[in-house]
Amino acid sequence: MAKQETIEQTQKPEFIYETYIRASAEKVWEALTDPEFTRQYFHATAIESTWQVGAPVRYEGENGTAVDGEVLEIVPGEKLSISWHVLYDEQALSEEPSRVTFSIEALNEQTKLRIVHDRFPSGSVVFESISQGWPWIIASLKSLLETGTALPVAA
Amino acid sequence: MDLVFKALADPRRRSVLDRLYAEDGQTLQQLCALVPYSRQALSKHLAQLQKAGLVVSHFAGREKFHYLNPVPIQGIATRWLQKFDDRQLIAVAALKQSLEDA
Image (cartoon, rainbow over all chains, first blue to last red; front, top):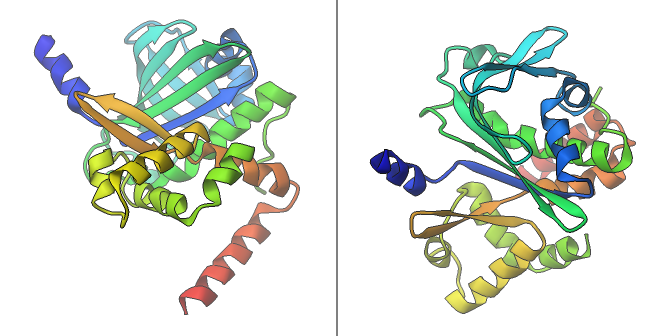
């Protein structure tokens, strides 16, 4: 175990995104884990899980599941780590899942949200498209919590 | 938002963001090899970029890696652009790019 931790600590993630949201940490956690929230900022998909380690997680959209994975680590209100298997892109279907970790930290009136996306398989198709996706999702989530409205989806 | 504009106003700081866009997650030492000024100056620029939220850092082992965080730029873009049709903007941006590349 100690050996695995050493590897973990020296591996550098591929993407890190961060934002400060004028909302409570509880609200930000709810926005990440409640389907009524994700529907508004995450490509109209509803997140579904029983939130136990090892349980499946799915972002369900009108046209089927967009992303599926499993809960790798969960500390309610603070940290959620899930494996990330993309289903919305046909080319990514056969790809090994990557990992997404959401960390929440309350700071005075604001909450810091950090999203780390790592452990991409080599030659990942998902890797290429990620930098287009998260910044918009995060900006939309921030807008939703601060103003009550998510960003309009491009027609 | 003032901090973001201030950070972006300097071409040296924009070039640091360009370096991270090309390859994300670099140490101070790696970045230092890519810029034509001192490590001390680079440290200062990185500190300003971090204060503006445009760069975030991550410790792995003994190394500190710097990452481009484009979320504040997305925030600026959507503040003034979201009422326009995204497709038109993308088309205009693509046209500008193709004309400039030509």
